[in-house]
Length: 543
Image (cartoon, rainbow, N blue to C red; front, side):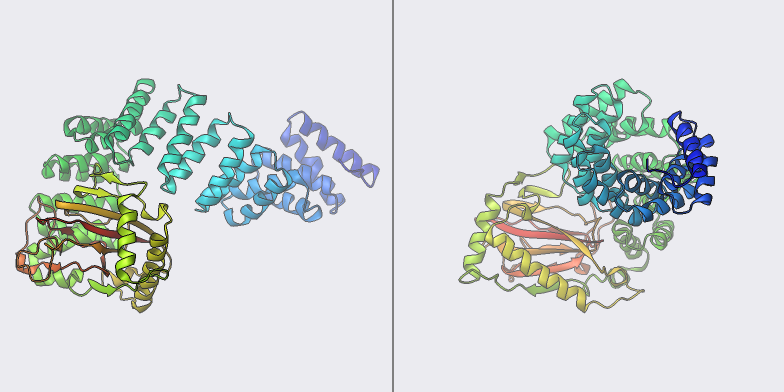
């Protein structure tokens, strides 16, 4: 502590310090207050007042006192850390972040400073910086369970599931009896698409339930994993148990309703959602799923009303828009549905220029095809995705070859030009959601004879697209059967099929980029003959 300027101030600071040392926080607050009133320039007075107020639960006073102390000594380590933490607890995240960054500079070896930086960055949605903070904490304190758990959660938010799983396993190595740790590992593994990973996830969920049988979260994630593993009866049993244990949790209702739809029992799904509404459980996802259940149950009018209500709450819900189109077609006809969705209006074809560094388009496409065939994340028919008899690359941009880097550059140029030409239209389901900033996910598909992509939409994005790298001779513009073409407008098989004449079909052409709204149902048609159909797809999601 600094030397006080007067005996009166010294006495007050001594009383406050003695009380703080003994953990008597309220008793420290009064002399600290009087010290700052007696000498407003006393750093020690403001510092102790901030600590006493913080420990007494007086966050507003603590923040003000620590701000005074920080102004008097900007590089005092404890004040920087405490003020940053108080601002974080007060949800003033943007103000807390610079202080907590400074704390990691002043206390580079202290794991607490890194942990708090990670917590602030996570709340601010700065997940890359949050990873840096939590990794800094685990490096300096490898046995810190909370730091490993938070690192796993943050990696998961970034979609870096392999790194997230590794962090979750480190947390479990510290405390193998933590049910929440097994649940977290199961939840992360549920994002994978290969059976071994999904089975490991199920084992983790089952271990969580052995340790905590009443964990609704673990039952819910077990249901998700079992659905992906094509065990619908067991999935429904776990989903029902999750709702029984936590009936007010909308996520549990959502999983049970979705499983009932998967099990072809839409009337039961409708009843599940309506029972939840009756007991006060609500949300945009539940309203949308209620509409989908009504649609599958053959009630397009009530379905349309429910889906329109869901879209008033979440105008960019791609699944709601897609199913609203189906309900509109059943009620009002194919032309009304096509106009509503922009089925013909919003599908665009762009010739993508050859990236620099290649002699011509053929050289670029040969290089790109080779990179896709040898991609480090190539997977055969991933579980739960739409690829049939085909390879998917995962994140194409994870491999940084000259062809992939050049393609990414050309793709972003085309996307940016497309968005710049879009004009916001509040009455258009696509143009009312034009993003200002976006994130991009890119992957490749490699299919031979009979390989295809089944009907699907892209739920988490706004704009999607396909670029064609290599096509077999069997695919061509003059084929009346449209073998290998991409088809828009046909919904899932359990929904009423449209008149084929109302569909929108596009013939693939090497070097062309097709852009379309992510909510449009689409699929590729199979073909017969030699050669490969190699294409690149992308999703663009608003930030």
